[in-house]
Image (cartoon, rainbow, N blue to C red; front, side, top):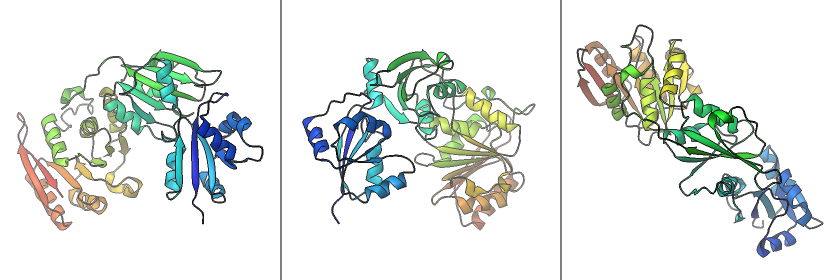
Length: 394
């Protein structure tokens, strides 16, 4: 079987494309071409008269099957095919194929050029068919310049609304509409202004920070919203920071917070480890709004709150944890620990804050019965409160 070859040519939305002599020769010698329907409209006039065209449409499996019948294919893609582009897809699906890439500017580069914006330090992310996580991480990292590739469901309006919902009013938004097309338009707006605008597709966004936002390392308890009349039901700041240190979250991917109450541990963890996926469980219905309120207060998007009894949850619905913090157990600590151990990833850790000798003993016995070990423990006394023992198990 002959070696499969892909020549991937990046193009803009301009109707009159500039092609180098090398690309012109590739096109003139080509027999089989592929790209989106919009790409076909742009390049149709320069294709050979006997050209075969394969539309890139979903489901992509059908496209890949068409590719199997041809050994040499010229593919047209938008901008830089290696920038969240089709070249990455082809490398994954056809790992043994020979691939050459001929890029042009991607849309975020074009928008930066139109704005005369130095973009060397810009972080580029995509929410095109993707969740919000990459944008959330960039915000939590206080990135001053964020380029965002959008889609029809996550466009400029939705991006502005998400930022404002979590208190990130310290950005302005620039939107590039139909870049390279005759209908190209550039808008730079406040986030509030973006909420009442309409935007043409396709578009992309650059967010520019206008001022710094305060960020805590150890959030004082009095700044959280609390359960009505139960302001003491929160993991105190020094205990919270020591617990997070013992969870050893650097390099971990998924943390579970069991019995989150106000969400203080989850929020503090997300602030320090923005890429960490956090699933927070709590059976109190009133904690649903508490978590949402506190996340918005401290600018922490991306925590998944689960309002249900942890012991009744189908844990297969959630990503397996590398680290688990037990903030509440409802008197079922031993069975809870065993349940967690069954899904805990290898080298995962469990941290538990004990306020009594009895719960310390129950936790130790449960860990031992599951084949684990207590790796570390510390006891703290805060003000007039009873001693708290923080235990870490592996």
